[in-house]
Amino acid sequence: MINEIILTLLILLVIVLIILKTNILSYTKFNNLYDKKSNDIRLLTYNLFLTPIKITEYDTYNKDRINLFVKKIKNYDVICLQEIYSTNFTNINLLLKECVKRGYNYYYQKSPTFYSKHILNSGLLILSKFKIHDTGFLPFTYSKSYDRLTEKGIIYIKIICNKKPVYIFNTHIQSNYNFNLSKPYRTVIKSQINEVINAVKYFGKNNITILVGDFNVDNNEYNLSNFMKQYGLYDTNENTNKYTFINYFDNYNNEIIKYKPFICKKSNEYIKTIQHNTKKSKIDYIFYDNRYINLIESDIIEFNINHKYLSHLSDHKGVYAHFKI
Image 1 (cartoon, helix red, strand yellow):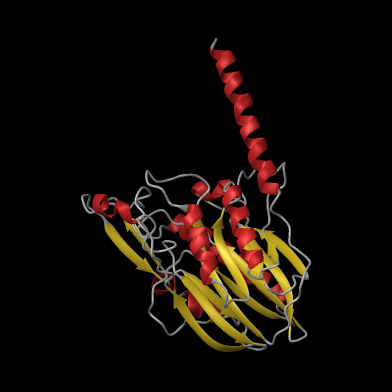
Image 2: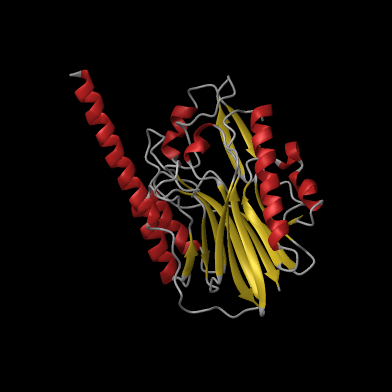
């Protein structure tokens, strides 16, 4: 009897994995339509928090947040998103459909192969009004904890701006689930950042390169801006103290997964009844090689919204940069 139950559960697990893999595979594509002509690139990077599973007892209102997000993106040319996990395929279809309506005719999201050991994709998505001429994915060698379930790495696209090739890289570095950055996590993060740098250096020898993403390390702790500068990559918001992310931790320095007040405002009353610590960090960045590109302006985008329960689109803020090629 027990063996039959185990066999049934295994069969159900295989069926679920097949369904997930099939849906995930359907998102590796981009459209070949109109090609934007411009000497400028207005770029946004943003962690939209479309988590792969429901991790909170409260509703994260994914559909509402997507519909509110797409109303705020008309002024950008390229949008790099993180945490767009393709198990949320219904919501991703909605996101892509609405973005195409607004001129983002090209998009790229790498997915694991059917035989990959990873259940989830990297959660990385690039939307572009410029025609995408090339795409690629470079997987990380090491990941830890829950991140091992996802195919962590770097995706990139090549566009043409002012008749010059521009490579845009989007990444999401290893998440840290403790208040302080422990040595094992620091080691993995350092390894992944080095792999990102090597990728950008390889493509950036004679090309314009822009690197964006959620690096999951606070600039005050890791001094990432100065570190990247050693490799010719400059932080568009180097001289600002604005934070891009806030998180909540319990007294044991563990991340409080259940409560995301910036996402679900109706949880605010409950979070006040428990002891917690808050940590504001600058972990989202846009870096660029200033040899071939001029930075016109940059900013941190709040993405405040009017909603019955929500105050922000995500627990992150957006990072924006305007470049002249």
